[in-house]
Length: 494
Image 1 (cartoon, helix red, strand yellow):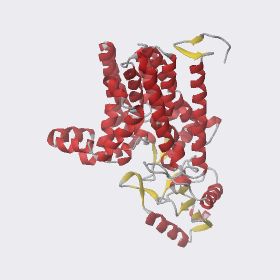
Image 2 (cartoon, one colour):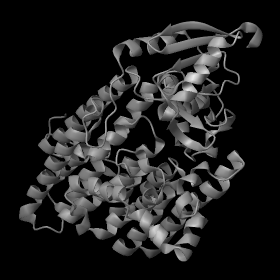
Image 3 (cartoon, rainbow, N blue to C red):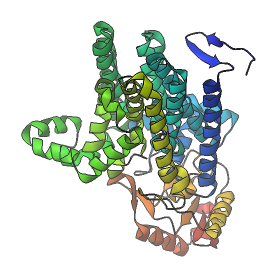
Image 4 (tube, helix red, strand yellow):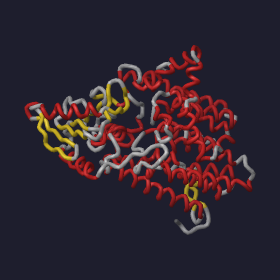
């Protein structure tokens, strides 16, 4: 820090405050938080607890882009080569290709995600300082952002483009708050580039801006921009690259099976739609989101309501993970609950704001210690854990992965696939196609079928494939240790 008692202003923001204890505390906290979360990810990656879903999928898309084939990947369900936009419309991944060029490792992408998410503490601090007129209270709330459990678990879950939207949307709120529409537009475009549904929070922000700030024309333009992105992404871009409707419509089979189907069912069977939103897991999900913030965002219902589009999409889904607060679909919810908490504390008397901010920080930090990524690896959280892989199996997987030549087409189990996705052809069990190598972990039962775009457990499929390759004369068993098998196809069949 520069020895000065004043704030050094950079264009557009008071970014660097020097010799101010709260600014220094936030800076240290952001760096420390990044180091701690990255250490947890590094441990999970080297311990084979991260998989091709979803880390490897992102790695392949980024690697392909760096190799001159933008967003090409191998579809896990069909084993066909495709452009990722036929699954998720997240061109943001293209921006990560230079990172891969500098440090060609899945861990580089994870580090960038964690570091970018940590930056969300800045707009929280600025917003709180502006609204609450206290640097101390603003500092506590910025720290509470980092302590909020679902920020940590989102950053730890490597990697998902929509996770980058957490800080981007907080910057959007800040720039709308200060009515700077040009930088807002930059962050709104970045937000939308992270996923096909990310136009919905931008749309809702436009409504909030029009009503809360009285900027009706600008608010209407923002609303139309956000809505147009999602409509075009879902109904034009995905069908263009996939040849059919989004595979993720299947998440909503019980309530209509498509956006149009949900609307029709809302009129024909409203009880079915409402019932999908009030299931036990949905209520628990809302409580997990609210309790760390002490529900203070309810004091600013207008801004909190901007989270409703994503909350509705999550609640209506048949895919239960979407109502798990650790799942990345929470990315378009977190920013608005936190920003609304800041504004909600502004409704409290000035003498009690510091106490409220401190209470949010303590509550969030306490829950994070129990359910954060560091707890998950020991299977010790109320939401379920992710037990460590036995050391012998980790060593066997590391040795198996090392045997596969760079660039060789390979079929691999899910966790092994996270280490083998920087190549053009990477297949999931049971697809072989062009594969000249196969790495099968009998202890990893997760596979993808044509019936579902998500992982499901089919240990019998894994065992049957391993047995078939063991009998097939065109495949040679190269290694077998701790339930991890490596096969190589003979040159005449390659």
